[in-house]
Length: 127
Image 1 (cartoon, rainbow, N blue to C red):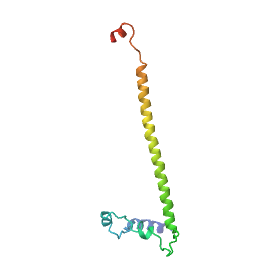
Image 2: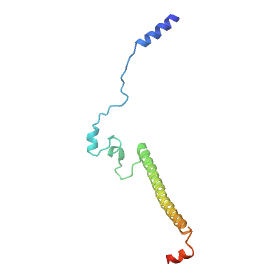
Image 3: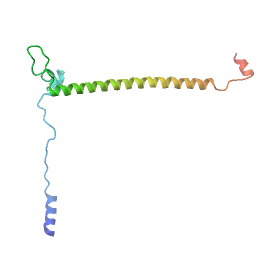
Image 4: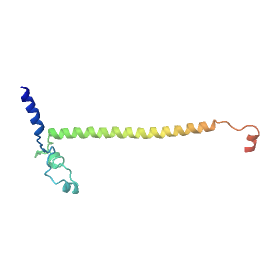
């Protein structure tokens, strides 16, 4: 048993197999051409096939939203709400920064005003 484990240990050091496996998917779509034309990378992510309903009623009734269309609308509404929230936070931060800056300037001015003033004949020389 001892000789078998030694044999296995020595053979495992000698045999080294290398495998080169690609982990990324091949893009069969010409991305440079799509970018030059201003198109999205994924042609199925946006467009009439994904945004418009699959069918329409001849009498003019509205068609129900598809499940993915509903998910996309909800996701877009969440993104829009997040944008509004972050922009309001940014505006608040700007206003706070301006307020703190003006308060610091006022404090500096107050300190300069409260410093010791010349007295006696030095005060009379300034006037």
